[in-house]
Length: 294
Image 1: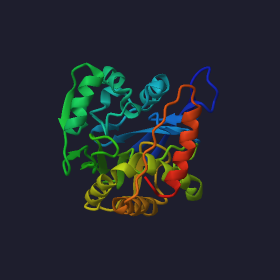
Image 2: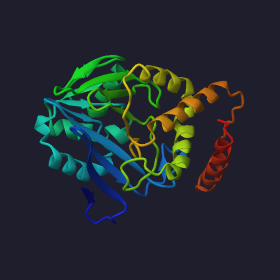
Image 3: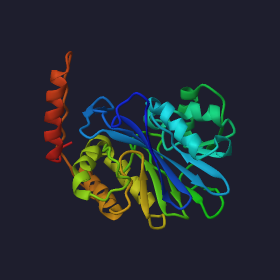
């Protein structure tokens, strides 16, 4: 199912709802025209914000969406499930593009237990300004939704926020990773079928967000290795990784190992009043990252 915001061109803000694994549905918020992220780097192909519903005997919602999708996302969510039946809201991390609608979800579903790392829960208290039930989890903790959906949490700090966790569903083999292994690439394709097309954006995303924390990447991947085989990586941005899981996670491993051994670093400083210096600096930064210098 795809829906568009009223009065907005079709390829601007749209919603895609699709079953992606057993008892698992994604609500993907497609931001076709976003051209900048986290201020410091430009986008050429927009982005998506991916949220997930896991239905066992109990129901978990993994992440929400950006506040700009409030109307579209909440309509899709309530059309897919009665919010009163949601038992858990898992916060992979509290960056606003994933937690921007947490307060709205809590208003619709005040009974939910918010699940997250200790730091995430502390951040969230300052973001939503309302009481909520919480469950603080750490690496290796599990949450049983019933019907075989045992969720195991993986600590992944600094990927790329300090409060990040991954969530692994032992029934489906899906690993929900939020920012890690994602890319800013907006298309109607739910999965990573076209590796050649997405590879440049996958690499650029890694260089901008993950490379500065390469040691943290390797630490998280070491903890991932203790899990059963990952069948799909349900990312927070871009297509989900179904067809190239080993290839793309392997690239993270290789690139991060290279980064930890690198000796050359470049820092770029600029001031821009009208945006021109900003554009030039972005072009220079792209060239630098292509040389594998961070």
